[in-house]
Length: 187
Image (cartoon, rainbow, N blue to C red; front, side, top):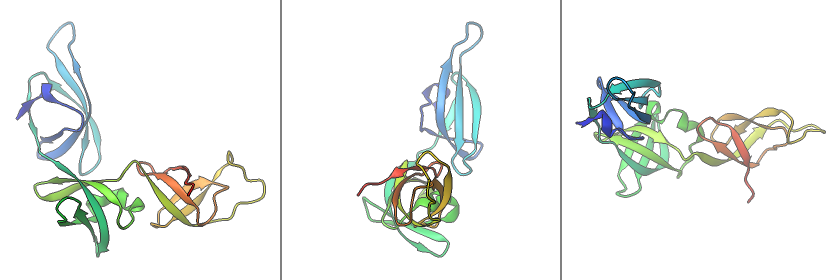
């Protein structure tokens, strides 16, 4: 147990049986009345973000979550098999836990996996990844880099919007947080 004064970014709290991570916090000491902590919390399982205010000194339950670098090995039915890079232990992680990360996940790619009580609860990819475009419509004469965009299918099967000048078999950098095109990769 800790108090609301001990809150830090990235800390995992157990509130009403659900796990929440602290996205941001601010200690507030108004001129009148008691101090309090204004925080923004993100539900680990659903991704829902809420604002919550704690009175100063209120007890909060902190959960121990172990973040490990794991390598994605292969798909096994509805599960994704990851290997812990330190002890080579393998984890089978469900589709629900992998979530949107599956759109940008290639075999042998490293991801940061949060483990709580022996089971994986969150899979986080690096902020951006390099992926190959397998199919996109050809550009037309006059297409420019500042012009519109078109859909492109990545080697993982995900479809994102790319500039009109991008062609098939082009390696690009993709933002894993929102699926946006960041640029071409020069080999």
